Length: 281
Ligand SMILES: [Mn+2]
Image 1 (cartoon, protein in one colour):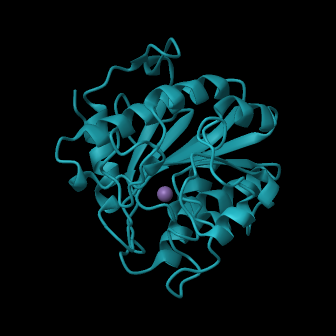
Image 2: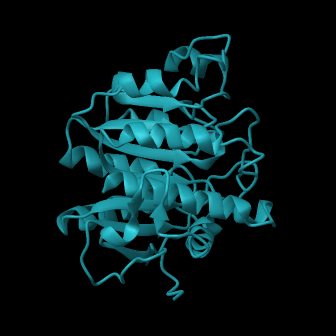
């Protein structure tokens, strides 16, 4: 039955272990806007999936989760949107659930991490992203999709921020993030095993999945595609390892479905949401 909610989700008023919420905001997009349509497309894409995830041998039917629908966001104000995200994350936490945010542009992560770190002072953040997003300001704005991870480090120490798949940024961003140059894709930014070993297992982990981390051949429906990205096989390898970590929440951002008329990007995004949810069980 297609309820308009994410695959298998119960309605907002019920209870669960996790709660999905859409944040249809793309107000700071510099190149191609459209991620405001992301949450709707991810939900729609989810209805073509099975609840069973064969890679993890787990089934969403064994998990109770709700879908709160979309946050009301004013298109003009990134600050108000961030406040709104922080409020809904607080509401989800107060109801003893874990938040799953569907973007929307990457700036939604700022509100989530800002609030999550209040509940989990030893929070670590894992960023999957093609872009460093580590500028201090962009086009005169300190809050932008291009500064998101820098703003995240206003709330957590930079050494608690982990990255996978970053392959685009200014030289200054690469220096500040400590990613070794020149990039070595054999053993460098895509070294999933090395990454998993470096993240402390007992620390609460929040993941932000910018879908442009995937290769554009798999994920063309994003605002800023970047070649040489993750395969789904590499992503699953990561998710397998994350079972041993404490995933306390995640967001999936930057799907701009109109750039992929085939609809594949939305289905891949929904699959990634499902597989991360299975990882939370
Ligand atoms: Mn990105």
